[in-house]
Amino acid sequence: MAGDQSYRKKMEAQLDELRTRFNELLDKVGTGVDKEIEALRPKLKAMGEKLDELKHTSAEAWGDLKPGLERAWAELQESFNKAAARFRKSR
Image 1 (spheres, helix red, strand yellow):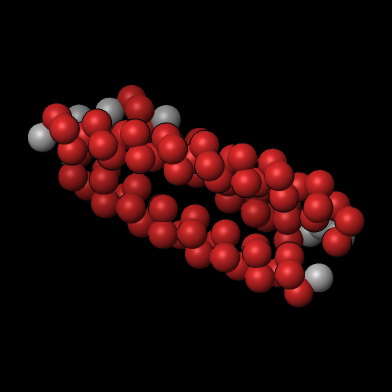
Image 2 (tube, one colour):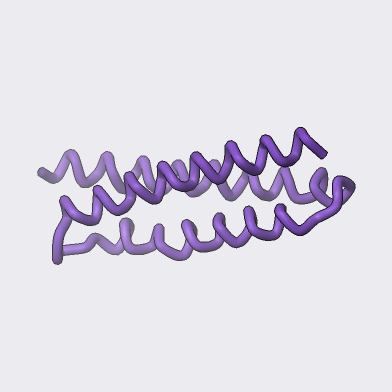
């Protein structure tokens, strides 16, 4: 159980950091928010929901949720990095 709590806390910290980076990117983009960047909002929300779900699961269910959480996290990071890189190139 301690392992899943430390994993959850690590993922929450990473999600908070990505939210901060996302908001910084939105500040730089300003009013011309890119569709790709805007598409990250629901992914950030979904990731937060998956983490909340993880808080309320048993140790057995945690093992089932972890792969999906890791896939969602990888997809979110990839989407953010692509959008950020595209923005940097266009500026």
